[in-house]
Image (tube, rainbow, N blue to C red; front, side):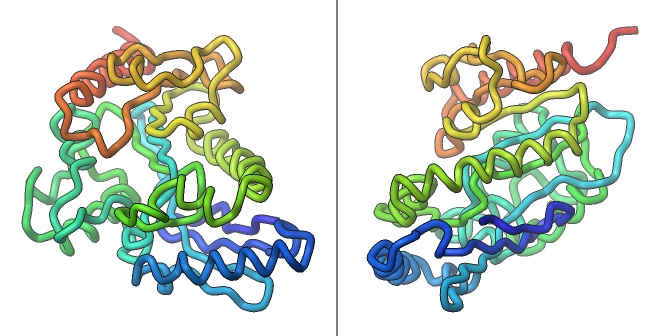
Length: 278
């Protein structure tokens, strides 16, 4: 049903067979109507989506380099990509008005990752996009970890349209039944990414409820936004006792003081977990 290049870095090309998602003619007709409204909600949608008959092709994103160094792996697991960021070539390309995205400031100020060839805050957004993408590929950044970034749902959606934004917009586009089918496919995709990138030891920080729930072990607490805001949503990956899982507040809260405290706490916790003491 979901076809994708599992070795891609940056832009990942994906395809969905609409006939498998929507078995009846009526279901497919309703989807086509919703899809037309979805496309109109953001000019970038037409740049990353194309519908040819019953085959939906779209671009997504994954920033997991095949290069390795001696730092332990840390996967930042997000909900789904924004259409404009996919088009630009890096996640969290910029916020409304072309400003630097709060996500990068959060990671920089808490010591999770600092890019070496650009200042923490810069007006040269286009240049920073290219620098961040290349730095993630080449592992050229300051961090205690080898950083990977992935999205749980590969389907992009607008960043700020109230009707179609985020994971909620994808749920509305697909409908409940098709969304469940896709969720199972995406869970398998993420499992492969984790296996390839982390292996048997490392860490995951999940910034979205579905992403967190898809990877947590049975004895790890269920997602709770208040616990995430307090930096207390911690457990293990479902397929590895030596892979620490932490649930973070949504990225829209990255400016919040509580988010910065949580990220510093998780960074210290993951450092203790992943980096052996002398």
